[in-house]
Image (cartoon, rainbow, N blue to C red):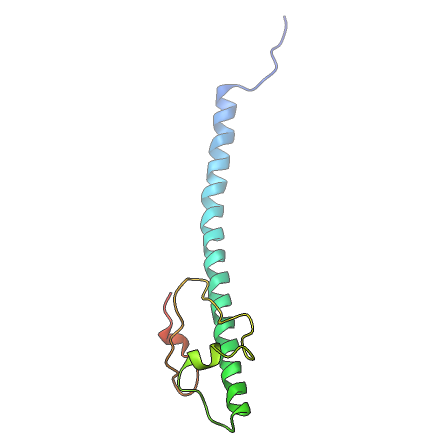
Length: 107
């Protein structure tokens, strides 16, 4: 008798189920990682803006800017333009205690 080579329907279904289970485990982790990466990029942007606010004050005899747009509009401090939030929301223009307040920035 000649044996047939190939997979049975049951074997294929088991492989598909295993792949589905692995995907169900992996996709939420990938999604969470993407959110964390965006949140970290946003926090880094806020730190950079706060550093540039301090630099602005040092260059202007200790006078702090009234709004963030004064600093982000200065091409000496931000030659590539103001940083964009990875979540596509705007950073607050009002400065709190001479700093960009991360708690006023929502995602």
